Image (cartoon, rainbow, N blue to C red; front, side, top):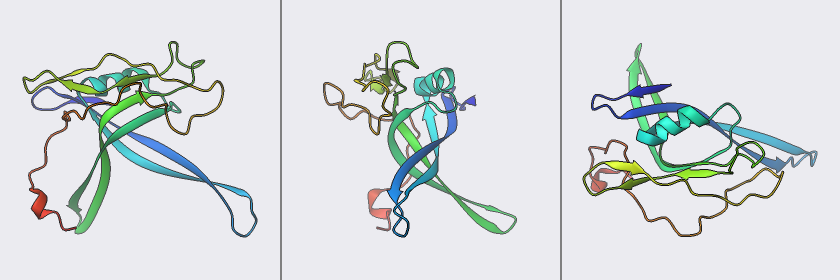
Length: 158
């Protein structure tokens, strides 16, 4: 669901599943393990996710973790979510015309960010990708459109 912050920044939240496989120690059978993650996207990436992603879409995300804490009915609740900095669509070529596209915010120097031009990714035909191919040039770190935290590095307990 696409929503807007007080300063008109687009925000969307979604659940993303990661699946891994291992061999059972007892039966030697292949066991599938799926984990679900909450992901929050901001700005143009939120729009792109809302427009192009659907259930089952393959996506590569990079970002940082944020854990929120709240009280409800006397119980303390925690939720960890990924604040995504990079969104890359990695569906197979047959599923997406033109192959994968990557969207990473780029700073224009005025404190606002604009989306990067889509980048093409390499795919192996028909095989599910465990990871997307590396971009041709390493991406320079860019500031996130996500709100900044109100704590200093010295306050982190680990």
